[in-house]
Image 1: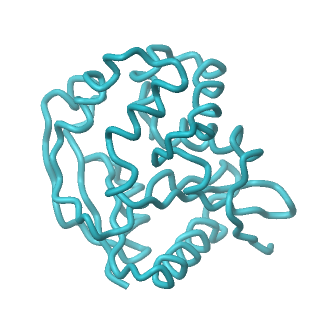
Image 2: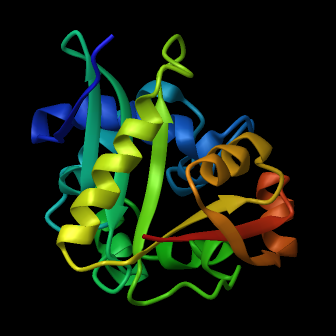
Length: 207
């Protein structure tokens, strides 16, 4: 089973939307995008996320930040990498406003940004590392990570980081298998009230 890794294109937006929604929920009833778009209707959320992947404001959700894994010409996994100094909260707000969110969306996002973590300004951030059901444990995520780290090294990076929820044991185990370690953790009452998870963890790898 051969895995091909390629850069995402604009026509991949529907698949990216599917992976972003899957990642944000992470075994919870509702995730960040359910909160942002004020609905848990999958069809509506996927339409919004498809648009979010294509906004002029290049948030971390923009398709240009994604790699896609393919097996037999079928998209089976994703990994997003972005520079936190460029894909800021302000850019994310602009992108959300482009897809129809109200002007007070920044207040809604405070439940996420109030969980302060010591994120490096010189690290490359990873997000939305996901694979389709039925393709788990065939090496997709490892292949995506290897390609991303190689590209990051060529761009002059030596540190990559990612943020996961406290209690996301499968995600934490997976990242640790890929060489990451936990370097920071913060518990947030507002985050727990909204998502049922105690807060967030920051994981890092030097390469």
